[in-house]
Image (cartoon, rainbow, N blue to C red; front, side, top):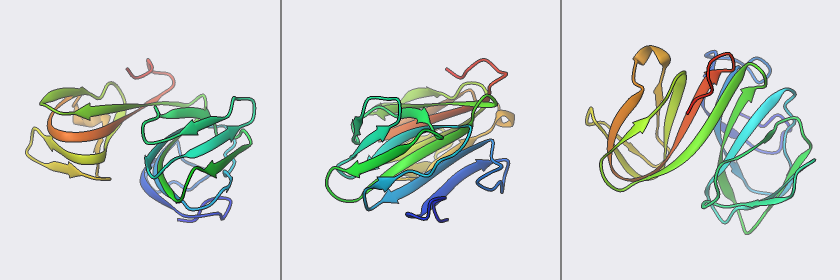
Amino acid sequence: MPWKNGGGVTTEIAVAPAGAGVGEFHWRVSMATVASDGPFSSFKNIDRILTVLDGEGMNLDVAGMEPIRLTTASEPFAFPGDAETSATLVSGTITDLNVMTRRGQWHATVERLTVKEPCIVRTGSGSSIIFCVEGTLELADRSVLTKHDALFVGEADGMATIAVGGSAVILIIRLAPSSLTRPI
């Protein structure tokens, strides 16, 4: 779908409620290719967490914050979606993952984890998405996630922990209503 400001396109990975448009979502997870410098779309009352997936990175300038360089090695970066924000690419096109939540109603965390041996991933309360940044993630049910695959784990699934293996870099996106204890 086109960006709100018309500057590019994004691939929606998940949204709640299902089918919600740009102005109605509770939370939204998407992936975008950024091919040129420029301003970010403004989203009133939305909090964002941005993670660079591929490319050399970008210099991000968010009003009221120190400028920051985001690369594939950077921790996910949280900022207000309604703050004036612009990006300058370091060197060429990048791909990023964007998590957006409605401020005061929903809360998200994004954790980067490198899997090199079997381990347990804690998804926490609320809904979660396990996103494979690179490599191959093997799940206990024998399914496999490869680069840019995602697994949605809803509250009703009752899966607070998931056994994983393989060799991968993953993002664990935890989403919960603000009225609940913030996800861990």
